[in-house]
Image 1 (cartoon, rainbow, N blue to C red):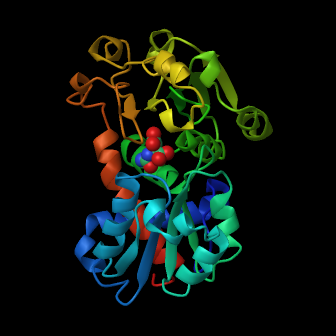
Image 2 (cartoon, protein in one colour; image 1 turned 90 degrees about the vertical axis):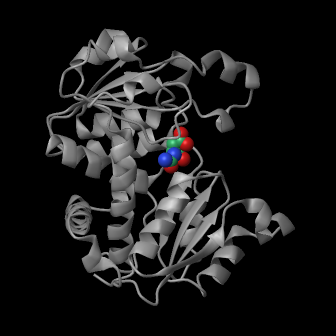
Length: 307
Ligand code: NCD
């Protein structure tokens, strides 16, 4: 039963519950007009203490397309957090106005804390470098549409694997399905946190390799998940400048990839995928955006208990 539940990280949803969300999302994709009223009278609050375009608008679009309404703020400076209000108090207040809350905060653990003070479901829309479970629903719905399932895949994760929360959430989710392999492509300084290799991969018996050069491994991959170097999480501007263009996927590198490999990216992209790749049929990152909205529609409908 998903009604009333908080979604803080991917493991908060069982494989069966993810399945429920994907099959509802797929029904919505086939006939969106059948769902335009299901959230009538419900309110989604979007509390974004950190910048976002896609995620916030996609949550809002999702609720509006279900016939519900939205309220919220897009930056911490326009909320009472700027007057010194604690997150706990903000959440107590907002949860008496809204039926479901999607929140993003730069601090790891903020969504979990919020869930302890909320009378309504909290959806974590990103907590620092930690997790981003609805991006994972987005990624998985896209993988399911393009690859037909979630097992037997070689998944290359490329870029900022240290701070990229979408990567951490994707690893956690895909490790639950059989026969997947991960290829971790990053500079040493941006390598994946140990809690992912030890507590996620090793525990699940998942095999993974590490690599610094994308061109060496691109030919082995079924999925290439590109990520942006997370400028806002660096302590030192110099390090960011040195690392920001570590990887640039271009036509030349795509020539080495399988014909049925797909390229995913949570967006926003900076330089890591050259625009010349956009026309390649294997580029799935704009499709992924649309799947994100449908995945969020399904999640909102489930958590509010209307479907
Ligand atoms: C991602 C995020 O916020 O973690 N963006 C998103 O939600 N689609 C990725 C990023 O900012 O690089």
